Image 1: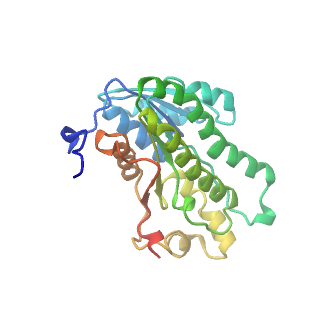
Image 2: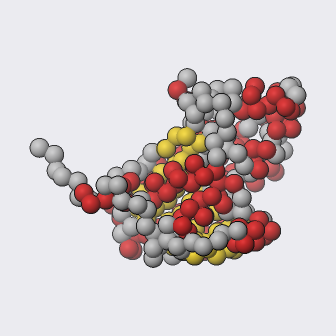
Amino acid sequence: MTSPSPHPAHQGSPLDLAGRTALVTGAAGGIGRACALRLAAAGAEVRAVDRDAAGLAALAEGSGSLAGTLETQVLDLTDLDAAERAAAGTDVLVNNAGIQLVRPIEEFPPEVFHTVLTVMLEAPFRLIRGALPHMYAQGWGRIVNISSVHGLRASAYKSAYVAAKHGLEGLSKTTALEGAPHGVTSNCVSPAYVRTPLVEKQLADQARAHGVPEERVLSEVLLQDSALKRLIEPEEVAEAVAYLCGPHASFVTGTSLVLDGGWTAH
């Protein structure tokens, strides 16, 4: 005989993060912006951080009326000590910030490889490290790492990005194992190509690397392995993040919520 659910009243409950503090990195645009607005709409006190001051200002101006609050902070995640300090006292942490360069390995600048791994893997480790003491002390926490289908599959010419996302998936699982006794869940959201500036900026690089005209990159490169032939919207990713922060996802940890349009079904 199985035990009843410890939270039967949570079935179908809307997301209510009133009284919770959430930190979202890379919040000036794209997925991060959508996540910051979604969590603030659910009542959270959101700290939106990014190195893009103008993007953060636009986020603040366009936030409108929210159930929670939204504060912005300019933060360069290559300053790892500052990143760890910024995460102190947070209840929800969304590791989203990312950068991309498309180049063959033999042409990939080592300094860029280092920067990508710093921003997309070492900084999330430091942010998690900064957030966990508070989460452990209160017996509750939600860590959501924005990974990618490239955390599960590789693509040519993206050595740094693929390496960082594969590492992030492993870091997330380790965090889940350590956090479970303390009421902290850790998961990845792993989308395929999202309609963001990060994707739009790589079209020319993709065209050059694959030897196809830029106007054919979307259909012949980015969406080639996806059963659904469209980009996913940032707001769709934000809804997945919101689900993982809700009470109905309290038993979901150490896994990846894959939003890849059927890419990994091959």
